[in-house]
Image (tube, rainbow, N blue to C red; front, side, top):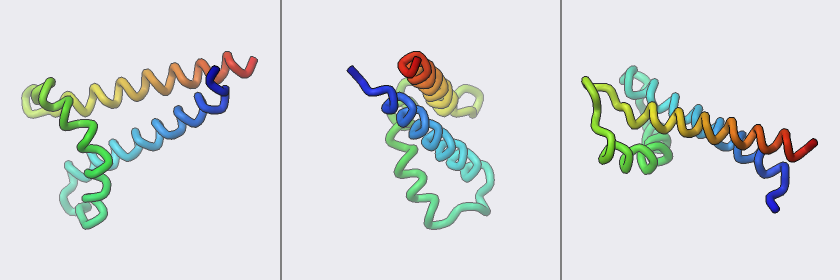
Length: 89
């Protein structure tokens, strides 16, 4: 049995990762924000996006794999919050 608190922790970690993804997207659109710190952000994001990019090619120049990751994270966050809520009742 998984403790109820673990579901909430998973949701928070995924929310943080989603924020990191959004920062990565912002960096790609605004080159003047790039610096040495962006390499660390890329090290967190690229291992997730690269395998999806092999499966889902860009459509009209848009990286759809990024959108797929965001949607999947949202879905898992929703499920984990739902389980955390029902577990605590």
